[in-house]
Length: 367
Image: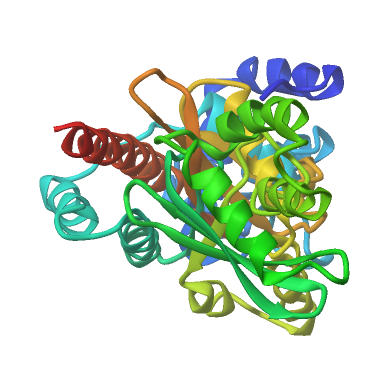
């Protein structure tokens, strides 16, 4: 995630701080991650074993505030890191830890795909992340690029039909679509038969590309209404972004976010965040964000327009197929005072594990 030129200047300034200033800044951030509360110069001086007087610490804090790395909630309070300060801490000072064997074992066991469908496995992975991180876990599940086994149209009412798709790994998706009035039941049956005769393990995107050309070639064999049913059925399940890695969004542990609320303003912010998460556009943007660089991506507060809300951070990583193509993304959302050192390796490990589990499912189907 590229920094803008002003931020890059600030980052260079941070890396050029004296060792004393860096240590004070580190302690302020660690205190914020631990408690969420501002810390004052007297407490900082005590934490440093009284190596520096409170007055000296105050001077350093004032310099850091002038650089935009700290802020004061109110006049008499201590200091908190700004979102820029957190970003620069993560990029320049954070020492990322590693998962314990118990944590790896918990994630591996809970996410095990044995006897589970892909959605069930992804839901378990999301719940596990939420539990271990004490944040809200989320996953953008694959959809359009999974091979299909069956597609069927079911009459609901005049001008409406249900399209049912079943993937090779048993994922069932139902969508309601609008049809021209007067479509007979026979056209729905013909459309189902036409598609199922050609589905042959193709993804929806591949099927759509093949069928569009074939419809033109065989339009004489299909009446106009049946052809429209086929075209509608191919378009609707994948939405308005055919060929893009859309999917469904699974969020678990929303209560973890609510536990961190400190006032009405926070409550409204969290509500707005949940509303944003329901929008498919946000899902696609999350995937776009993960595709721009390797590994875990970190979004802190309002430094980007992902959610248009300050006060929350997103740590997310893509999971990929055997060809290194992105299938989806998994991560956590929490307050900006996330324990980044612990959560970054947790998200990374889970994303890699989910990718391997999906590989194994593909191998099982091939066998």
